[in-house]
Length: 497
Ligand SMILES: *[C@@H]1O[C@H](CO)[C@@H](O)[C@H](O)[C@H]1NC(C)=O
Ligand SMILES: *[C@@H]1O[C@H](CO)[C@@H](O)[C@H](O)[C@H]1NC(C)=O
Ligand SMILES: *[C@@H]1O[C@H](CO)[C@@H](O)[C@H](O)[C@H]1NC(C)=O
Ligand SMILES: *[C@@H]1O[C@H](CO)[C@@H](O)[C@H](O)[C@H]1NC(C)=O
Ligand SMILES: *[C@@H]1O[C@H](CO)[C@@H](O)[C@H](O)[C@H]1NC(C)=O
Ligand SMILES: *[C@@H]1O[C@H](CO)[C@@H](O)[C@H](O)[C@H]1NC(C)=O
Ligand SMILES: *[C@@H]1O[C@H](CO)[C@@H](O)[C@H](O)[C@H]1NC(C)=O
Ligand SMILES: *[C@@H]1O[C@H](CO)[C@@H](O)[C@H](O)[C@H]1NC(C)=O
Ligand SMILES: *[C@@H]1O[C@H](CO)[C@@H](O)[C@H](O)[C@H]1NC(C)=O
Ligand SMILES: *[C@@H]1O[C@H](CO)[C@@H](O)[C@H](O)[C@H]1NC(C)=O
Image (cartoon, rainbow, N blue to C red):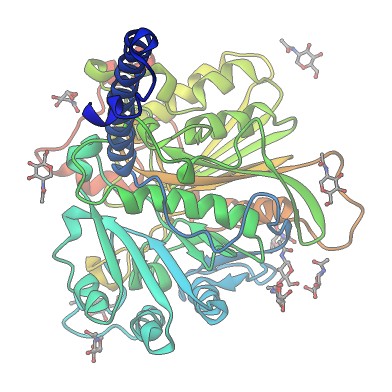
């Protein structure tokens, strides 16, 4: 304050006026300081809020929405268990483990993986199974990434914190972040995808488990040289990454995890020289920051755009809605479609295995009854049941999770069970054909997915549901005392779904 008054050299007449002016000036200066301090405080506060999700995010390696690559290669990857019989005319796509190894080959800097369940090295088996080497090979390569100065980042579920495999990987330089899914959504992590160098991606049904590379039937896609899509999926990875140990989901998200593509603004990608609209989706809703499409909306979009057929292949189908936490917007699709989309051929392929809920059959049966009553309704359901192998130690299961129509495919991490989409974390990829099918001799990715569905559908492992006949695969279960009964009341389950 005294400093403020110092420059008064003028005579007294003016000085009082000047002094007033100066003190006023001083006052406003003080005000300025206060305002400045407040602004600072506010900025720090905002920074603190944002740091809950890290406003600066991860380095995106200079890849932006404007310079990213849209000319991509897509490869379907499958695991078909050795002894699952397929007619000779079936095409074999790239085996899953080879696909993942090729992704690791192309990695230059960073491999990011979201997967909760880890058991690639078959450490659960007393005796190493002859087919376990496929998963073990992937594990070995992941362990050795650090030797080649490549970073491995893994997001997993806190429930699997004791996984010896994740500990081994961490010991070999992998960074592992655990999400407390119980605290975040009361659910589990079902997500399973890879992002390599923000250029290549994998997404599909497989767990990071040797069973998935050997004994289970799995399907996924690998997309190479596709930084636009990879950057988008990397942002989804970053979301998981930043939620480590958090007990709540921040209400303000960092820009670095906003979606680049969505149902309204898909990526315009060239996959193997054919143009498609492509977008990613995610679940549950609170894992969807600005612009991210929900899986359930992606599935509805694929289904409602269909003109001729809808083929659905899922491990579990159970549209059971728990009334006490009923969310209409997250309902398992299909029933509405049966009612609305007539003259479209709908085929539903469900796995029948140890953990198939007996009520599945009631739901499916009432869905079919509903259809029979409608003109032009075409719904067929089959159950996929490979023979039990290795005497119940484990079972071969078709774990595919996709929908294919005449125009689009959705491939994701979810089965269609009750409110799975409401609580469990997962991701999906939707590929929509633009305009007419291009005149090419090579089949498109959509045609290939259709072919994959049809091979399963016509294989001897797929059995139609027959009236009043309990399928073989759950007979055992029904004979146990604590199991469900299929009563006439529950057969009428219409009002449940
Ligand atoms: C494969 O062969 C089976 C019979 O062996 C036949 O029904 C089916 O149409 C064939 N599929 C293709 C795609 O050729
Ligand atoms: C993976 O399994 C093999 C064979 O059982 C074993 O020799 C190896 O030590 C395991 N690797 C790790 C890192 O545990
Ligand atoms: C995870 O969240 C639950 C519920 O909020 C809490 O009880 C538990 O302690 C958390 N676990 C850890 C390891 O923080
Ligand atoms: C990806 O692009 C690089 C460089 O353009 C090329 O060498 C590589 O073969 C491409 N990979 C695939 C799978 O097309
Ligand atoms: C999509 O990309 C292709 C090839 O890059 C281009 O020819 C086409 O005009 C694009 N379509 C839209 C709607 O941007
Ligand atoms: C067509 O298929 C052949 C044989 O599988 C393959 O070599 C070629 O790259 C494919 N062409 C396109 C445009 O995908
Ligand atoms: C339904 O949800 C409520 C609340 O989340 C839960 O307490 C109850 O056990 C659930 N019932 C079933 C049958 O899942
Ligand atoms: C059923 O299909 C036939 C022939 O495609 C059509 O003429 C008829 O209007 C359809 N009925 C309904 C109720 O959609
Ligand atoms: C398991 O099944 C195989 C053939 O199906 C049989 O040879 C073997 O003895 C069985 N093992 C056990 C422990 O039941
Ligand atoms: C795309 O091209 C690659 C190699 O050119 C081929 O291996 C792959 O099968 C093709 N994918 C589809 C869906 O045709």
